[in-house]
Image 1 (tube, rainbow, N blue to C red):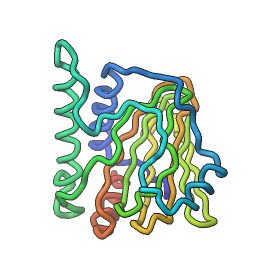
Image 2 (cartoon, rainbow, N blue to C red):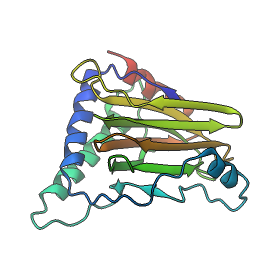
Image 3 (tube, one colour):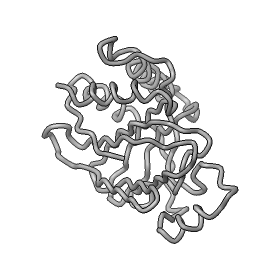
Image 4 (cartoon, rainbow, N blue to C red):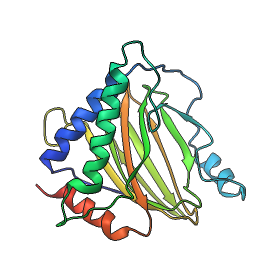
Length: 217
């Protein structure tokens, strides 16, 4: 996993619009389950041959699928629109000079509650992917990736109106062999939006080109 600077102004505008819609959705935040992303837990999961690759625990409001019904329906319509156009932007909006591919998909689309929001340890076993994870947080939080003895931790960036604002972008590879593990935690007093767009691991060229697009002015 590595941190990617977001320099593309058009992309930042789209991300800001997406995050605004996510924060406006009706949320039900709970304090349980509490984060369990210790290295002791990771060691136990690593030894579990039956671990399926998905987080055993998490605490967030998930929007990869259909958003919950509201009486006016306006939130559902806004989210559907933002999801559709942002994914199409990732698939085709970068142009042939960078990459165009239909296999991009949402792995995670969520708003984490303050303090307790987290994604438990997981390794995408049997579903290898290259991911680009956009994180918006006006508080504090972090992402952590572990492969064998190598650990990378990236703290959420908070810049206010400077540069990429309160956006943090991390990118990485999680192979179908399940050797790379990931978890994250919202430790601050503000909600944390996460937009994870992924592509199957064999499309590494498209992933590299998308990163180049993100980092270009």
